[in-house]
Length: 75
Image (cartoon, rainbow, N blue to C red; front, side, top):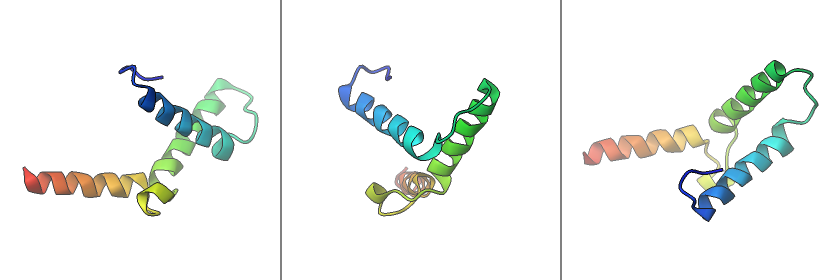
C-alpha cells in the first residue's frame, strides 16, 4: 500500500480503506465509471465535510490549511 515500506504507513492506508468501505461504499456499483464517481465523492466528503475525532472534530482540509499557514509564517 505504501512506497516507503513502513508498516505504520500501511496501517494508516488500511484504516482509510476501511472507513471508505464501511461508511461510503454501501451499495454495489454496476460499472467502474459509477464506482469511480462514488469513490471521488467519498474522498471529497472525507476530506472536506467529515469531522475527525483525532483532529479535534475538524476536517482534514481545515487542519491542513492551518498547518500550511503556520509553516509559511515560520519561513
